[in-house]
Image 1 (cartoon, rainbow, N blue to C red):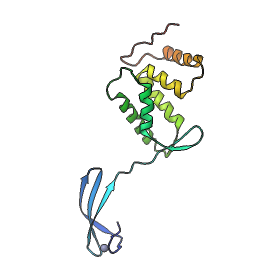
Image 2: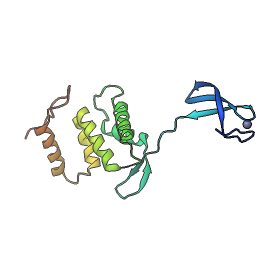
Image 3: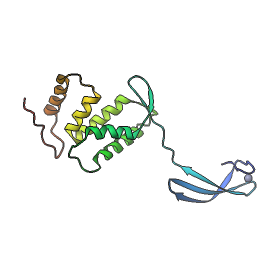
Image 4: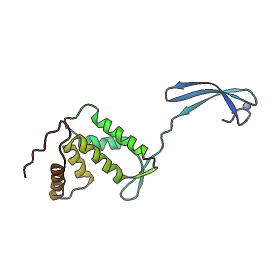
Length: 162
Ligand SMILES: [Zn+2]
């Protein structure tokens, strides 16, 4: 840390304490002995999403949350379940340690999580995300769910008879 007074390149930390969203340090210049204060804040790494049309867009958790909320609208989910899901997805994305992530990877991740949470929400999300153009595609997805999966805990089987 360069001294703001004499420009000397080294200082010692004489006090440091946690403040709201970072650490406040009192420093003393090793050359002119002047004391000054610095703040360190955690800077979240910027994560970019590569859209289908190759546009780059900064990852926006609110947007992710809005999409999940819409899919989960009026579903009997526990309080905070949607937020927790968005948190999980965000930390999974961060853990991937990449600067850029294709939107399809995020979409698949959301689908995987929703499938565990609520089938109706999953189908809703999938119908938007996968852009089902006709009912056959949608039925195929539902059939897959019905044949390969037992419903997540606490979920009723979908009332569909074939
Ligand atoms: Zn100095």
